[in-house]
Image (cartoon, rainbow, N blue to C red; front, side, top):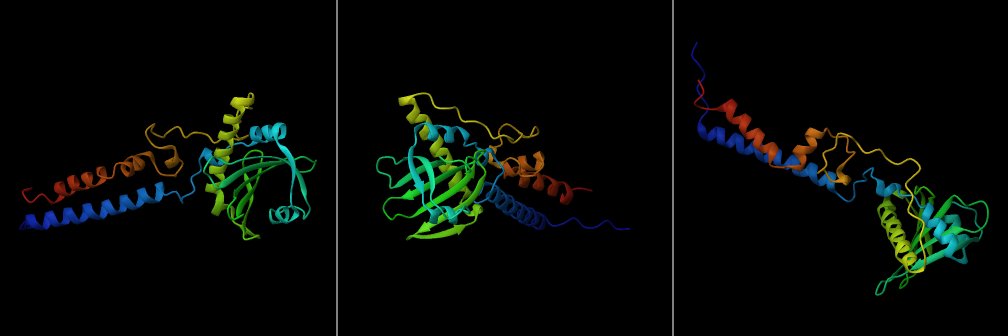
Amino acid sequence: MPSPEPLHHGVVVTLMASLAAIIFVVVWAANVTIASPGVVHNTAVFETSLESLAEWVKATGKETVIRGGVTVALGLPDTDLPVLQRGFRSEGETLTHVCSVASVPGHEEFVFVASVDEGSGDAIVWRATLNGRLVSSVKFYRGLAIKVSNEETQALFAAEKASLLREMQLRSFRTGTAPAPKPSPAPLQEPTNVEPNVPRAWRNTALPSELTILLLHPWLLPAVAVILTLAVFNPHRR
């Protein structure tokens, strides 16, 4: 029985180049998806406790109220809510960052966080639990309250929490000791099979560690594919 003729060298090169290009595009797309800021990763940044911040606001905040129109948009009764409040705005910044806690019984488990544009009066207000879980989100645009999904604003909420906690530490450094930030009541467990050089934001993606290594090194997978292709289609192989 005659043996099959070996593939022409030009055909082999074309096949290898096409395969490498396809694999590179797939790997690039996977990297973009995993690293995209819009992808919600189950990381500790969204689980930061607000208990220490609430204690600081209770000890140093000024008395004011959250108006009924705001409370009802956040899913609370349509009545003014007495609170203690701290706010700050950095030099040259138009946004005021605000944290409020209820000063009357009945709402002690909530913390209210807001980012207010002093130029336009527009704002985003969040209602969260003491352990940092986002409960409800509202945007105020030209005086109108617009309820928005938590998924739409949770990245901004996480950034606002980090900003408030940082400001608490900076201001308390000048006036006294601030309560240390507390972890969430149920902190996330670090996976034990994650390589130390894998960025935290890319962890918990349900990908095997071997595949994660290939994704983090985009040229590794095409190189492996080229080697395998040469082994299979080697025109000089008998």
